[in-house]
Length: 268
Ligand code: HPA
Image (cartoon, rainbow, N blue to C red; front, top):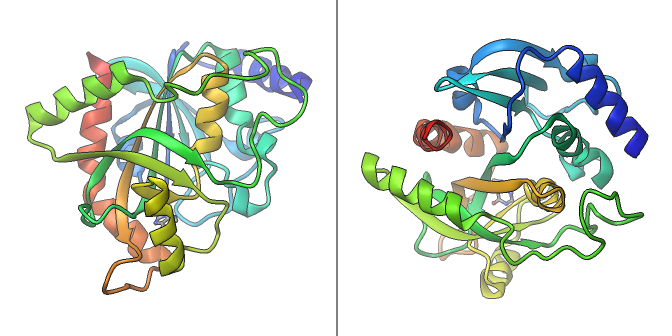
C-alpha cells in the first residue's frame, strides 16, 4: 500500500501546476465550492494511477489543482465511501497521497442527518468531534509511519480552525451549529430507533463519510476542519422519508454559506 501511495504521489507531483498545502474534500452536492476554484489543472480519478473511481451520483470524481481566493488549493470533487465496497485503505488512499504531496490542512464537508432536536434542515454544523461507528478503523493493519501506532484523538478537529470559522460565520451573519458527527457504514439511512440511539450516545449528526479521512489525516499530522449540512432529521415525532434526491436538494440550498466560510478561512 505504501509503495502505491508513493507511486501515485510521484505521478501527480510530476504533473501538478502548483504546490498547495490546503486540501478540500467536497461531499454530496457540495459542488458550489468547486465552482469558485480557479482551475489550473484537473485530473479525472480514472487517469490517476492506483486511484479508486467513485460511483455515486452527484460525485464528479476529479482532483482539482487551483486557486481559491488567490490561495493554492487541492480539491477532491467526489470521495470514496465504504458502502460502495471500497476497503478503508482505498477510502483513505487520497488522503495518504495528499500528505505525500505536502498538504498540511484538510477541509472536509458532507451532508448529514440531524439527530439533535434543536437542528433544522439546512443548518450548517461545524464538526467539533466524531464517533467512529464504522465497522473498521482505517489505521487497521501495519502502521504506516506517518504517525504513531496509537494516535491521540483528543483534538481531531482543530480548535483553532473552529474558532476561525465561528468568527467568519459571525461576521457574515451565517448561523452555524456545533456538534458531534457519527459515521455509519451506510448505505441505509437510520431507522427512527437508530437515530434516537445515536442521539443518546452524544451524536448531533449522522452520515456515511468523513471519519475515515479525518482519522488518517490526523494520523499524518494534517490539521482538520469539517462541516456538515443537515439535510434531514431523524427519530423525531414526525418521521420523514429520506431520499438521496432530498438530501442533495437540502445541501444545494445551504452550500453557498458553507462555501463562503471555507473560502474565507483559506484566505485569511
Ligand atoms: N443518515 C446518514 N447519512 C446521511 C443522512 C442521514 O440521515 N443524511 C445525509 N447523509
